[in-house]
Length: 177
Image 1 (cartoon, helix red, strand yellow):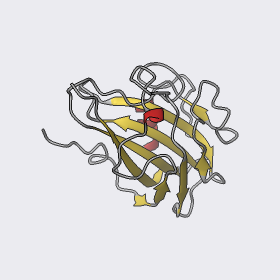
Image 2 (cartoon, helix red, strand yellow):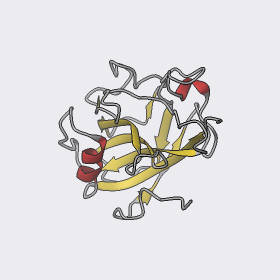
Image 3 (cartoon, helix red, strand yellow):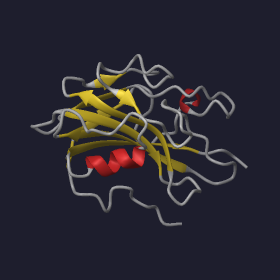
Image 4 (cartoon, helix red, strand yellow):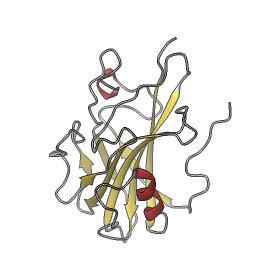
């Protein structure tokens, strides 16, 4: 099965660094970051820290996307817009129902389960490993202008012409058959 790159057809952007105290790049999600529908899952959003964003960054967005979901369009697990340029991290659990752990002015868009929060990994049993692209997008605008009930895909479309940089961490998950 070919491994699609969700950024292959987007405008190129500078890279910068994102790290997590929750998961290492290329490693499996801990149980807490999996969906509450799987054993041990708690739908807790990951802790993220970023640095080295390009000059001119006026805000950030954070997205978590599974391109391997059997939907034809992948699955958006989390989307946060309008994170102020002064922010350099989000704590674990910031993606709860209230988003109270997010920096002031930031807001969560409904994910593909239509909940404005983080929803954890839950690949179908026996479907094989899934990749979860955890991305911090550095933007050249203070507000991306996407309504709070907009979709993560609309956020991505709106960011395409405003993205200065991307910091990418990839986590994995697999549910045995």
